[in-house]
Image (cartoon, rainbow, N blue to C red; front, top):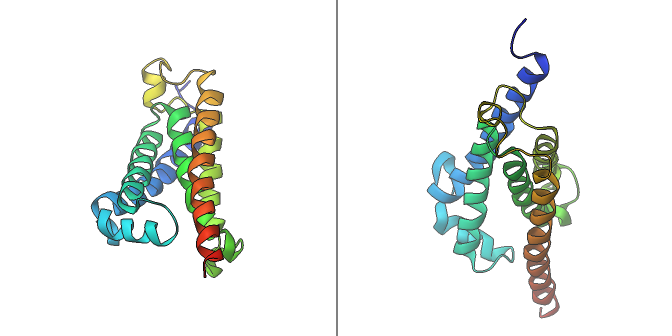
Length: 174
């Protein structure tokens, strides 16, 4: 009998795939890798869509994606990693909501799918092919799942709410 099964292999594939994608988006923001704008370019974009100050917002979003995605891929601190990545994706989705659902029209489909997947991983756990398992789940306790998700939801609601207020006020001033 093996020490892992197909569920563990499936969770590993999901974690590495989704975590890698989220981390790569963070690397675009922070370092300008993979065709990204780096802190300067991403900061200008963040300002243009209502996240202020732009450079600080770019750094926060980039580090959250880079860190959360990397930790998810490793299966380390899975509840916090999944929640952090989901919060970043909620912030991204809020920018795309006016364009509808589907990505081909500029909608929020893609960040929503990434965010829901990272929440699913936070809730399900990393499986046995993970650093959390190797460390006896020290950073992956049952109580950490709701704590991480609720904490992230509160912070995300404040950040996105402030952004949405700025966007509304800018629209009224035109």
